Length: 151
Image (tube, rainbow, N blue to C red):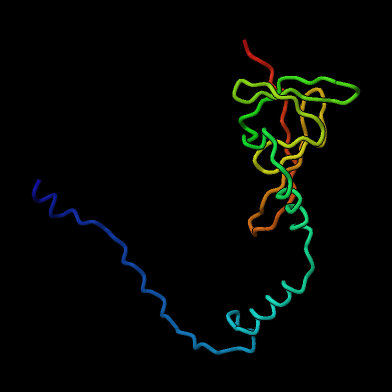
């Protein structure tokens, strides 16, 4: 066995030589330096010179009004359990923490300034105002659908 073990040699292919590294010299081009003070100053002046944008117009009225009771709960904590029509106007019944609330068009719910825009027999449609990845305020649609109770 010892003779066999000594005769047995692993066959490993040698590793190829690495490619030679050729360093490149840094040549400053005529491109604009991204860290220049002039570029930053021009951008700041442009932002200040612009009138109030649509994004600030979206959030300003929301900050000025008084919050409603259902704005203290996230949408995923709410369930729509029914709908009805009172005096010709649609209304939805929403359950939060085993309490029942009546929601009408124009009511606010959720923690993202959600305003009810449409109520049907099966869902409540609302528009929320949220910040995108850049920090701009945008509108986004959301729905609260009727949840049937499982027995």
